[in-house]
Image 1 (spheres, protein in one colour):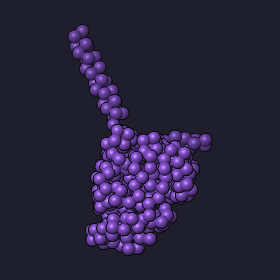
Image 2 (image 1 turned 180 degrees about the vertical axis):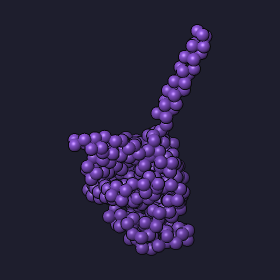
Image 3 (image 1 turned 135 degrees about the horizontal axis):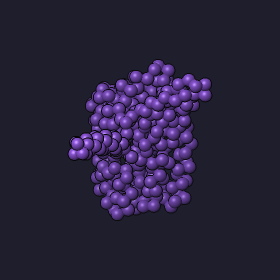
Length: 348
Ligand code: BEZ
């Protein structure tokens, strides 16, 4: 009798342990997507609150994170507190490839994913990297909102993703550790960090550079130790990553724009009511408008900040890159009718 009781309580204990371990396992999974919770308002009526998850790769002082915060604030205000946003910055949830997978599976709801990364999966995104294509961020946003811009956005869809728009960072510049390069001739043989996006790497190869496809978090140490001689970057990330501590020259070429693509989980977005979808879209648009105005106003502030930190900030005449521009247009217009239309419609 005593033995039966002991076996029984051991069984109960083991079952409880298995349940506890299973629960711990769930907590260890990266995230589990939208969280809906029911609560009661001041009148005692039940209210459902939705908490969305958004991931991106930049540090918290970068424009894209600040735009994500603005998106969260707008969601909360426009939904009277029924929609909130949790933000996972700085690649906390992994690489862009990991984040795209998590959006596809629905374990996160939204991501800001670089068009550069997407250009390796969906080649029409190469259109965005036409060298010297746009004068201003405003012009690039106009291209994104056009029919052809929307068709390129839709080319990311089909695996559980929905494209909701573009959020642009500052245009790309060239940072050199200790050489004031003034032309592709001066850049020949340099090892520069260039995002592993085919159109971006083609541009630099055509200028005689050896492109190194390092991820952003590895760039500071590579520059400091001389593994690379410089990089393709934006002014924002040059400041937020303190590259001015290890590089002397910033050529503000503004030779390419730098879009992130706002991706959502397709099924989850479509499962929202029409009113909720409108709140999400309007909140995103408010964040995009804020980012456009803010970043445009920051251009001169960022240049001054780099100078204050000891960098020489200078310009390179765009006509030095005529060969690279022609090579890009010839190769990529051939590649797809959408890229051709984008270049022919928007090249300044
Ligand atoms: C980069 O990898 O160069 C980068 C990514 C996100 C924002 C800015 C720069």
